[in-house]
Image 1 (cartoon, rainbow over the protein chains, first blue to last red):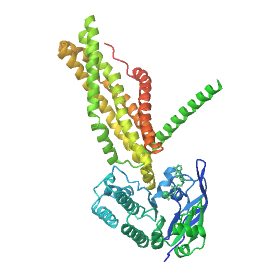
Image 2 (image 1 turned 45 degrees about the horizontal axis):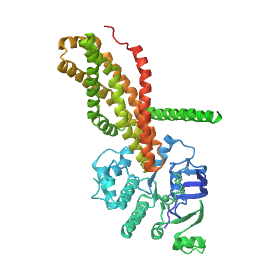
Image 3 (image 1 turned 135 degrees about the horizontal axis):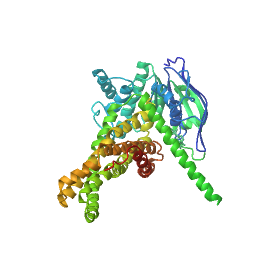
Image 4 (image 1 turned 90 degrees about the vertical axis):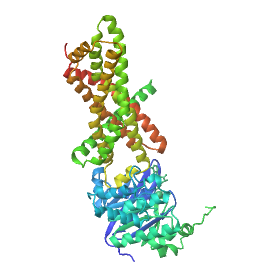
Length: 252
Length: 264
Ligand SMILES: Nc1ncnc2c1ncn2[C@@H]1O[C@H](COP(=O)(O)OP(=O)(O)OP(=O)(O)O)[C@@H](O)[C@H]1O
Ligand SMILES: [Mg+2]
């Protein structure tokens, strides 16, 4: 059901080194407009680092990142602002502003994009909070929420301004299966409704099935597998099988 | 000898790079103030935290300093038969040195620590990255409002501290030591005028800048979780206090040149 258009994000030979640790060793990846890409990979293989690189939050060691026809690796912090506003990001740990209530957190991107306090804005906030099941918790501070609720509030903040592209860093980690399923649906719905591009990092194979147009598997700083969910689940590559089925090979 | 030289070299390098970083942050702040949108709601929140939040501290600092200083000055001046001069001397000292410096040191402890800890915590919990991901420059949102709030409140807080210092001195001299009030007032108005108060408030502007820039810089450069936040907060208080004392020396010389103490 891919509705992919022209490339929105195009990453070439991307390397990232932190200290003396090589985290990414030459990633090549094109993400098309309207596409839902899922990234899977072992813990610590650089998935979150990859999202932050494309967001321009950390500098690349070498390589090229083109987003919406702009090379972003050469931009400075001020120039990156407009680029980042094209992309919404759900951080792995939520990263809610803890001095603001949930509703204020969700209102934040709207206010920053110049929207004035209006019934229109409030209904939009309410709508998004309802979609993540937090309609009654808007007045609470993040500290008063459970981990899963915080995650969903952060999700609401990431999607509320309807950016052209949304990065989800493990949107369903730590959520119960029913809520996970509703989040997967929300991601799908958001993508179809606003035709936005999505990149989802997940460890949840059920999400991969229900969300992905295409899957890439990160391993040791490289893309080890790239293909449709069907290809992923029918792959005969032993490393891919092992990851998908979740076997721990003690003798490796 | 060579290890000493390399140690010294390293120290100088760290010093230079630290001031370089402060200069860069000041540049970003200037850009924020003149070229970016000012978040007035944030300025308001900071004003409440800095202005109202510091009331007790400022009042106690001013009053306690004024009172003890008046007592000490009185003991000596009484021996010389200069009782009525107590008010003038205390007021002069409060305006030009004690008010601004002690208030700024108290603020460095309270506000500097708060700013460094708040921003540092935001840094380690990725809230600063979340800001950036929403296309908001951290200096625009975090530093500029704190700077403006400080700019508005510090001169007033210093004025307040001076006022309470002078008030407490009068209470001691006139109320406790029975210095005749008319003479006391006469000497007070002869020795001090509004220039002395402006002198103190001007110093306050400089200290406000020092506290905000240094504390925010510590916060924004925090690494390594809670330990880093603790370290950054301590460093913020230590560095700002040192910087205030050193800056005070030079500012006193400079401002005394511009606004000399009135001749009586
Ligand atoms: N700020 C940092 N400083 C030093 N090393 C870092 C930093 N951020 C990430 N790393 C390292 O980069 C590697 C990749 O981290 P990353 O967070 O991208 O993993 P991940 O693939 O998202 O894992 P997970 O699935 O557990 O979230 C890790 O080995 C981590 O130690
Ligand atoms: Mg991660």
